[in-house]
View 1 (cartoon, rainbow, N blue to C red):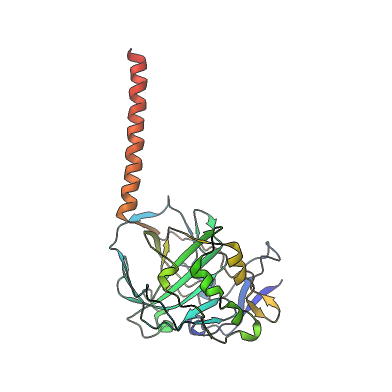
View 2 (view 1 turned 90 degrees about the horizontal axis):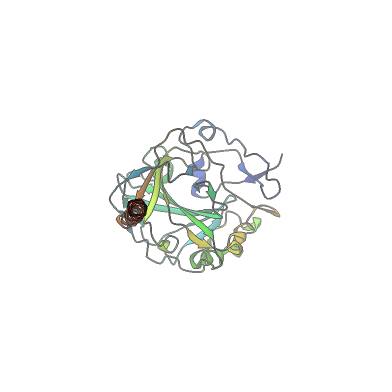
Length: 305
């Protein structure tokens, strides 16, 4: 059985705490190849991620609006690294913070990385790309310590659907891939050629799922509040295929880097909708009700006259 060996680097070394190699099955070569056991909490945890998110099965929640600070600031000194299991961006000039919603505190962006295909699914649909925007609770001085606490980390998981129109933000990231995609460049950060605002990766968060989960890489620490927007964003398959050329070993490409779905284990998954979405749903229900009344009226008239 062949598994893709993945070497940890940068901040994920601190997050994983794993001394052994871990990786993903090469599903492009063998779709029946099982996902490996990563050991520890990854195998025995009860709040593991990712999971399938169901609109019908989710609890309906109402929270204050999410507050994004400096997400629209263009970052001109971003660094990119191929760490052997993903492409990771860091080195933000300005502190990007997230608060509000169900979050009990302020969180600051630590790094951004990609998964191809998506790790989360919505209504059993898997998307071609998922971008993780990883935040650390400001209560804790570093991401490693934050991973030890259930309120330590928040991750926004942004899903991208197939489109004929290229995604400009993803395109800006792809422009620098040639500098890091080869195995010889692994773990060697390079400057991102284009400036990028994090808000370019998710133009809005009008509605979202949120639940208590884990990191999706070893040590799979159960310290994550997940926020997965219900709106997906466009990307072309050609753009996604650019990431599949990333090498994790000499001449070996990382064709996929998503973790298999985990058991929900009766966790509360909350669907948060904006007032506009609720109004649209109410209007739709109202129109359906009026239609039903009209139909009943026509039926009554037919039998009465």
